[in-house]
Image 1: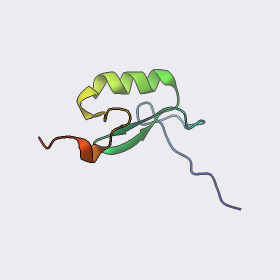
Image 2 (image 1 turned 90 degrees about the vertical axis):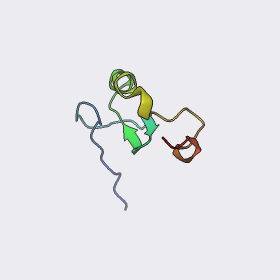
Image 3 (image 1 turned 45 degrees about the vertical axis):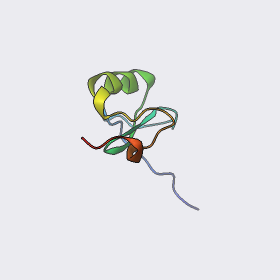
Amino acid sequence: MSEIPQYACDLCGLPVQVPDFSLLTLQGPKRFCCDACQGIYRMLHEAEVVAEGGAASDLPAS
């Protein structure tokens, strides 16, 4: 039986219980424990978040 991977919220460090709250960033995927943490991270790191439907490789080099 395979174990379900456990992740810590990339903002507050609490355990991620559901996979619904995630963002793709230039540094890779970020996971969050709730909508609030996801929203705060998005606001604080706006320039690093990849647009929905896009990929990090689609962004212009800076």
